Image (cartoon, rainbow, N blue to C red; front, side):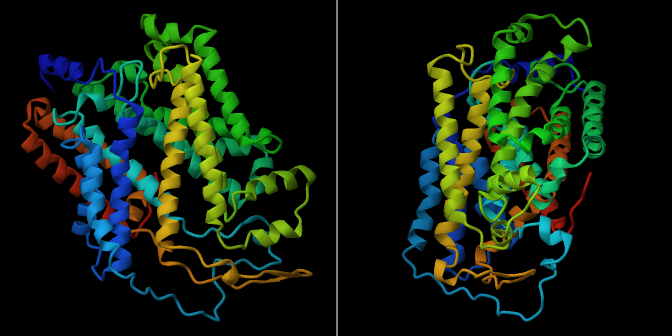
Length: 517
C-alpha cells in the first residue's frame, strides 16, 4: 500500500499536462530510425556480430530511452550523434553477403496448386520493416510507462489531460493501430473469411479476446487493492486500455460483410466522422468533460466514449495491413472484386506467388501518409475537431488522423531503409510464373538478407503482449518499492537502463517460442 499523501502527489505529478508539438514528437521518435540506420550500416559494411543481447540493447534500445529522457529536449542532436557513426561506415565498401543455394526440395510452405489452400492463401514473405515498427513501438511504450514516473521524463511527453499531443498519447493509439495491421492477416490468408457466417466468427473473436478482458479485470482489482496511483480521466474508474484492446477486434467482425463491397479505408474514415459527430453534435465531449460520475456508465465515460474512435483507428490500421502484408498492395482489392463476382481469375492466382513489390507498397504508403497528414491539418484549420485540437481522452477526429499519419509515416520510413540497404532482386531476376491449365511453376529468388529481422526485435515482436505485461508488472513493482518522483536523474537512468535490459533479456529468452494468451 502507498501512503495516501504520496498517492495524491503521484497522481498530480502526471495530471493536468498540455503536451508538446507534433514536430517535437516526430523528432523524438526519429531516433528509432537513426538506430536502425546505424545497425544496417554496421550489418552491411562490417563483420561485427550484432546478435548479442548487449550490443543489440546498446544500438536498438538505449537510444530510445535517451530520446525520451536526457535528450528529450534535444532530439535532433541525439539523432545526429547516433547517425554520425553510420555515415562514417558508409565510407567503407559494402561487404558481399551470400545468398542461399537453390534447393530441389519443395518448400513446405508452398501449397499444391490443386489444393484449396493454394486457392486462398498468398505467399507471405517476411517483412522486417513491419517487425521493426511493431517492436520499436512496443519498446517505446514499455520504456515510457515507467520513465513517466521519474522527473527525468519531461512533463511535455506525458499524456495530455484533455487536449494536446505528447509521446505517451501516441503510444495507446499506435497499439490499436498495430493491432489493426495484425488483423489483416486472416483476411489475406483466407479471403473467404469475410463471407463466412457472422455468428461463429463473432464467437471465435470473443473467445480470443477473453484473456485480454480478463487481464483488464485483474488490473482493475490490483490497482484498487493496492491503492496504486491512477489517472481516472484516462479511461474512467474501472475501464482500462486492455478492455478497449479486447473489444475493437470483436467490433471489426460485425463489418466483415460490408468489407466485401466497400473500401476498408472508406469505412474507417466514416467511422472517424461518426465519432466526431457524436462528440460535437450529440454533446458527448461536454458529457466527458462535465458529467459527474454517479453510475457505472458515467464512472467510465472516457473509456466508453473513446471506444468508437479507437475502432476507427483499428479499421485504418487494418487498411494499412491489407496493403502492407501481401506481396502486392493491390492484392486485397482484387480479392474484394473476386468475392463480389464469386470468381478468381488467373491473374490473381499468379500474383499471389509474385515477388514482394516493395516499391509499389512504398508508393501507396506515401499516398496514405500524405492523406492522413492533410486530413489532420484540415481538421485543425477548419476546426472540424471541435476547435480545441487533438484529444486522446475523447479520441476525436484529429487524434485519429494523427495516429494514422504518424504510424504510416514511420512504417514507410522503416520500409525505405529496408529497400535502400537490402534492395529486392531487379525486375530481370524476378521469378516468372506460367499458367498452363491447372499447373503453375515458379522459382522464387533467394531471400535477401533483410528477410530475417534482427533477433532482438523479432523476439519482442513475437511475444509482444507478454513483453508488455511483464513491463506493466515491473513498473508496478518498482513504483511500489521506490518513491520514483523524488529519484535523482542519475538513479532514474540506472533503474531505467536495468529495467529495459531486463525486458530485453526476457524477450530474448522467449525468442524460440510464441506464447499465446
